[in-house]
Length: 442
Ligand SMILES: [Zn+2]
Image 1: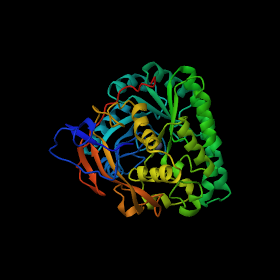
Image 2 (image 1 turned 90 degrees about the vertical axis):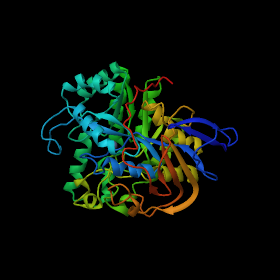
Image 3 (image 1 turned 135 degrees about the vertical axis):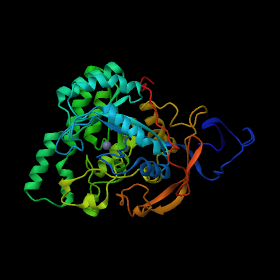
């Protein structure tokens, strides 16, 4: 960290220096006494689909207030099933087009991963075109009705390796989670504190083991999403030992909350995988420090309080919103409580996600890159109140939490989009980013 000034021209950072050394400006922003950080890059969010009720406008507004200047959502391969929103199978490309059209109302920059939800061969014909359209990463599930069999996962990974793309895995062993859930239902264990028992850490580690092993065998780049626990971290670390291209993330909530929250907040924090123990949270910080995993994302999902609390914990839906809170809440835990450095914070929330997902213009304040900047007040204390949500979600799993540190100003490519808790940008200020094939050799 050092004190200085930044010159911006035409959406890019042109120089870092002192007031005296920089060219004259037509407009200046005074950040005296505050921190100037690269905008947060959140590579795991859900917007405007069957998973999440947010529109691109509401999700990117929440992001702007939270200091997030780029996020990556998912374009889905339409599939047919009892819980599917589609009544016929379709192409991933057509859903990508829909999302790109929706993204025209974004206030921040957005990208898309491809989500492979069925075992239809056509996806292999689609993948090269998707990659050339900037969708260079593909998500696979081992759980839910759209989870893939190990055999098909193996084939997808071979195609990903051939394309030099990246596989993202949601890893929970499906039949284990299904059978434990059925057992708890049968016993009438309706209290939400039972929920973590339905999707245990070893079910996560078992599926992570399969994906990491297959990725190594076929030489595919693999990124384990929302890693929650020590057991899954051990798997990731094991498969990195020989230099295999295995990376991973955790999410803000797994580092800042524990499963006790199900006693306190009932079904609101029902997410998959579930919140874990305090020692798992410690292990996640340790793994971020050692770079066994390298990214903190949100897995943002917008649902209403009413939907989240309807029925029993097994009735769903999964997910929690946190685009607006991720930076201040993670900063408070990592820097204020645990004593991690600001360079650490910037690495896991900005630089590493940009580098991992083919966004060379993002996640850094290097001259020549996009002027995506957060001015952050590290001293302001406040209490999380869901009434301030820009997301369509009307609750927060952090509600009532006291936080020190807040986002003052967010710039996307030099435009101020949020300032002092207000949105000042407009739909269309953001752009769709066609991402490069990620280079993991560096
Ligand atoms: Zn997700």
